[in-house]
Image 1: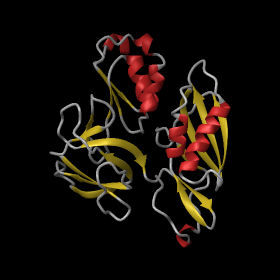
Image 2 (image 1 turned 45 degrees about the horizontal axis):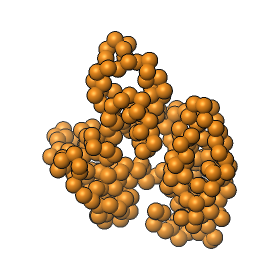
Image 3 (image 1 turned 180 degrees about the horizontal axis):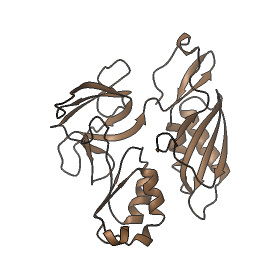
Image 4 (image 1 turned 60 degrees about the vertical axis):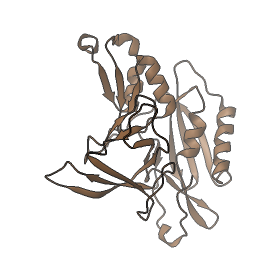
Length: 271
């Protein structure tokens, strides 16, 4: 059907686009001008693989059910331009204080200026965005989201000394996306400080366990949690989507936050 239709644009979540990219040569999409990713975090490695497979630029579009037209992906590279004539996006910290460009926020406040039936004024969304600090190379002067990091709720609480600390996706992301043989990864919290990371490899590749462990330890050192957590690595044939949401989740906790969290000192989110 794709060969017959010959679309000029292909839109899906990054995890679906990667599955399609493995079969891109079969589709023969000669008219394809752009590939648009949405809903899930698009890694730099996935962007490169998808773009190479389809021979078209990959746009990372950020939106929400409350404002579907919120942004357009950028042809110049990662990030998306906010349609600021239709919506206002405020990147803020945990206490709703403005966060400057170049620094990741804890959440956003969304105002939908075009929804006349049910206005949304400073609607709180738990997404972590980083706004660009420089004008975009594409020439578009609308505000640009430099990086879309995912939801602020996507992290683990681990025990460190006498307190709990958040463990974000950063150590896993920067360790495993550095490894060219890894297609996708998923970290699962089995106990408070015990995890298993499942790795799906690219076709025909094998994992260098020693190198993978080294990269992970280096990143855990940067957040000061290397000695606090135990992480097993497991190579799996494939990783699947969340059955409830239909989206792929990279961080999955089987135990949730600690019940006595409110009694413990809670630092700001780790960088």
